[in-house]
Amino acid sequence: MTSPSSDPIDSLILDLLEWIGPQPRAYGDVIEAWRTSCPRLPVWEEANDRGFVERHHRDDGGPCVSVTALGRQFLADHRAGSKPRSGDHA
Image 1 (cartoon, rainbow, N blue to C red):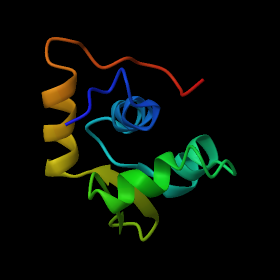
Image 2: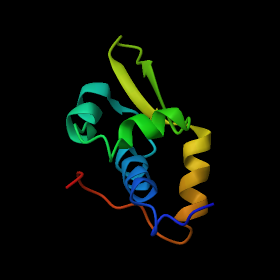
Image 3: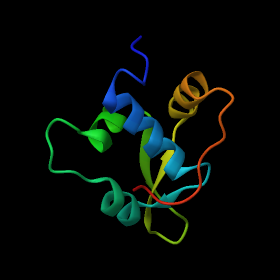
């Protein structure tokens, strides 16, 4: 597997997964912060394709996004020993 430091998409996917965090985030917030029109940096699309995030509905009916077990494992494998950063995507 390519190390995240050598693959900008992997590094950005790790940032996305950390940004979403352990609790679901509103789908609109995730898309607003992470959508891109750059075909060379398809972070959201790649995270979806790899099964690292899932979209579902909260009890109140609003769409939200969560990190999947596969996404949590990807984080653990690549950011072992580091603490998730707080704050928003820059």
